[in-house]
Length: 448
Image 1 (cartoon, rainbow, N blue to C red):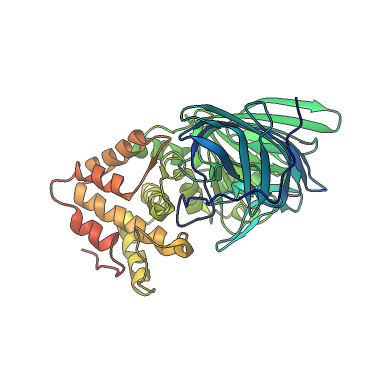
Image 2 (image 1 turned 90 degrees about the vertical axis):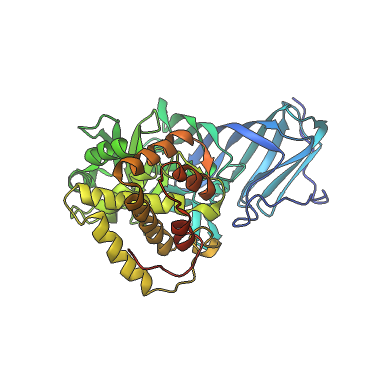
């Protein structure tokens, strides 16, 4: 195999189209990825990551070059395109730019292999640090919304869904967790290689890597396999705090439709505290502070599980529609509360409506702006909107709508307009006044 041309700082930088105005630097055009294969090695104590990412894609237009998102903390040493070196490549400003040796026509196969290494770190964003982060003794990846390039080259946008093969070699005392089914575990001297296969289409931000001194066990009583991964010291607390998990799964399968992943569900607890839990495809990540034996995080346990349907399987096409993730997961918390003998969904809707009326009324739910994507008002106003829709449609049609939504857009992308159009088919009268008041106006309307 011939050596690739050296990267050149003089390479011309093509104007990069904006894929999503909420994250104008993320995402790439001209091709569609179908699969990532990551063959990685990580040294915990030196925080050193190295390996090769092989990206299978198809050209959507005539391509003379391609770009990938990759953090500047990582250095690219070699690139191949369809088994050959490109004309040149450059890596700066979190973009790997590859000029092809020969143009590729629309429909052409594209296999990009990138060898890279470095000391990964989280990216600084307006939402705080996201991405690859060192724990006290291990690693956590929080990808939402644009943290994936902190540890592998990718097309980082929620519509760019693909399958994954993740192979990670790390120090043997540590347990490595990634998305999908664990297909092999090989121990060689002081290192262990873990291989995971994630067949369902997954956006880059929901791909994760978690490394720690963990033990594992299966949770009993669930038709969908649920696996726990946690520090041994938290076993008793976990059994108390996560005891309702199987019942939550049963309820959500009945209300939302079949669980969308073949490999089951993993609940991981880090040995460090986390400000908030994190969702990944098939995995929810909690901090040790969420597992203290008091049951105080039960609503969060329900919230993260619900994301497997709303957000992970059915994913927004644009980040402006984030209420379709967070409003739905928040309403799932309320449904669990009502089911398990806590406050009813109506009580919770009225409680949080009172809170919303006392907060600034400058948020447009259907387009909150990037700074307010994860504002709690998006969560609560989204959940109230769904509750009001439920009162309009009645329970039978409302939950039939949700099951239709998760079936129709399973492992795909959708937006607010898709949801409102689908809901119209379940309504006997126009829902436009509801949408106008709750999605497209900033003022918080009174409750009926």
